[in-house]
Length: 559
Image (cartoon, rainbow, N blue to C red; front, side, top):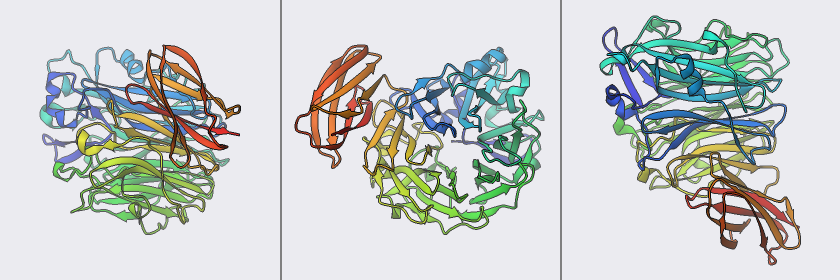
């Protein structure tokens, strides 16, 4: 988290919450507080986003940032089997832009997000910062590029529009001597963007909306902006002002009536706010206050509790009855850990329920919560901290539109010790979740070992089995368990990129380990028949871990 002050022209604070600056040039040493790297110099992953095809819930997309000392990159994975397996996209957002700006090199980037339209067309957007390192003063004219792309094959590949139409916003900035100046060029800075498509049957159906915090050259025009791409067009229109002020950490989503909702934090007023648009993003309502905060963005390093990139990290969802649901962090004085809240609105955001402190439901304080909704079902997930800042990931569920929640269930199979990994390790600015009628997908940065990696948990609410399937998105191996076993044999297929040892363990629903064995697998496909004559009928969990302690779990049933 880095705050850069514009001193040469005016006094203001511009915060790069989502853009990660990387050390690729000697002059960048002044930003080393903004470099989030692993303590063991491994690749870290953060800021994942997931979206599900509204026409086919077996199809979904996940993207996240990948960081290491000296570079930042984006990874995209798509699934066609409900998240049981993930395939790497051929699309590389960095190289695609680098080819169109051959004189410049990437020095920062962030925020890869997705949205599907009604026809299963997939949109992707991200932000990047480039500099010409061949110049004597390369940080004087950096290029800010906010880019979008489309896919017609569920993210296996993407295409860009020609020339400048591939940018929904762009600008030029100077980063000399630790200060920031925004040049009078195009849009200026467009940061922490979010996307939504109108999936209603109304007059704005299939409109693609992108919302972002905009810092133009004229300070008086700072605010939250929205641009719209109509369903039949291949470019975005001019911007509309959704909120005048220093709003950030935005979420936008469209309800079943085609109303566009925008939630965010005003970091100067320490408020969580909501605005909406009934006319396709052309005009917006006055802001509705959801929460009066204490320290939604702890810019003072002394106030950091878990990580240097801490922020309110609001997560927003709309259920099938058009009820609005929001969770967020606040960093209260004299508290050693973040405090998380949940609020809901049943009248389109005009009024919000009294914020519920989430540690009254979860078994501890919650860091970086997420919310997802489908029909009248609402799910909230988050990193639950113990007194020593060690974290496990939990979820709570509601089947009545957020009026009440059941007891929490643990999704993770390992522990992240935030105290041990330190404040500077990169875990991103937010996590992500999505769901269908029954299945919930929660993503989080898990730092149990081998750096910080993106994990995804698949939880089937309808089966009421409290059995979670855990899949590391970027893993050297994958497993498949044949659906239902008979004759006391579990059939397991393991696909591995390397030769090595794998530990197999089977657990019953009450957590008892009923089988454990280490197998050596060669690169490629290996199959195993595991004898389990003593298992009674019911559901079980197979857990497979490799020598890096990367864990994958799969559920199976015995007749």
